Length: 78
Image 1 (cartoon, rainbow, N blue to C red):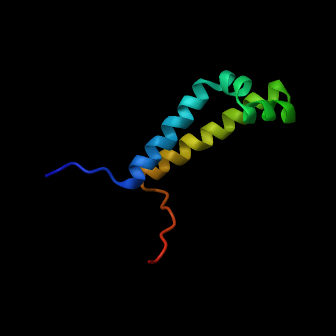
Image 2 (spheres, rainbow, N blue to C red):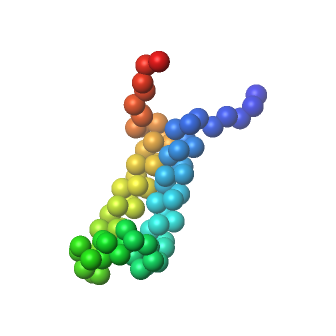
Image 3 (cartoon, one colour):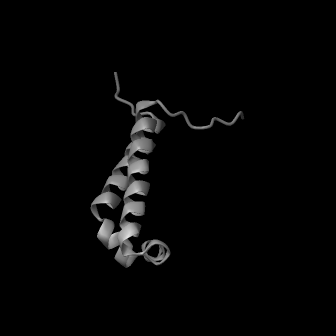
């Protein structure tokens, strides 16, 4: 029996993995990307890191919940 990975598991895993990578590289993200620099301008350096951490933590939780099947994506009728 071949092993297959569902689309939800694949996408959820990627979302969680990229969010975890962003959480690990948070200083780089704030310093080197335009969006990170914009967050720093809007919130200041001390608050921007916490806003970024919150965004990435939400991404990790969403990705895990999607991979586990607890969140179902919208299905359009064809």
